[in-house]
Amino acid sequence: MEMNSKRKPIWFRVTLIFILLLGFFATAQNSQLDLLLNDYNNHPEHILVAAHRATNPHYPENSLAAIKESIAIGVDIVEIDIRKSKDGELVIMHDKTIDRTTNGKGRVDDYSLDQLKQFNLMFQGKTTTEQIPTFEEVLQLTKGKILLDVDFKLEDEASVKQTYALIEKYGMENQIIFFLYDYPETPQFQKLNNDISIMPRAYSKKDIRAIRKLDDISIIHIDESYYTKRTMRRLINSGYRVWINALGKYDEMERIKKNSGFDSLLTKKYVNVIQTDLPKELLDYLRSKDLHR
Figure (tube, rainbow, N blue to C red):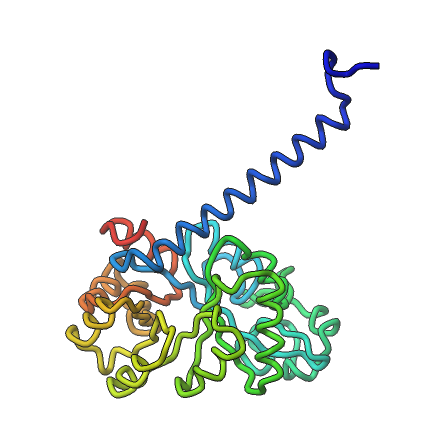
């Protein structure tokens, strides 16, 4: 029987629609990430917003729900903290213990992953349905959507290699900014995978001069204590992203009076990544001034 002149069978049409939808969503995700990476690499005049621990008014810090909310509102970078369970799984948790952020007690590495998953994250003094995420779950959620600032709370090289292996598994090297407290360690990390961006922290202008001698660095975490327009302008004009925190002082000012904290912070004109606990407010502020896409 010839089928060319007849309608295709239902299974064929359903399969075709499914394939087309998969292609559409994959293209949309790639476009979203492409826009972000284009901003990061080619538009230093656009200030990128980093959500500290994916903080927002609705969900617990470092939770999958909070990260989803960050993606939904257009945050550029989510900062996450990596620790390890007793059985060696990489999990997302800022503190050494689970006391503050969950309905459990004890050190993160006192529990296996299965045991950690029995606890629930707390939010504003109440227990939620959110669980402690694994790093792999975060990668699965964010692939093609957002940049991740990895605040690595572990020290051994085996854990670094384990973290890099997961990033490589999902092909997400271009979405990772790996935060280093000690910039001299940069070459060691780059040897493992030079496609993963390292963000060294500079504690002084002397540190900045040393970091500028390193290869393949696109972003530097600075402190306002040594900020000068001349130094930071040179960094940005040389192609670096300059990261500064609104955490604490400026976020608190913003909570008290709208725009006061961000106005004050942006007197430091030559910064173009800001980490905050108020990502939605910062996005609205920057967009109102045409400083964010």
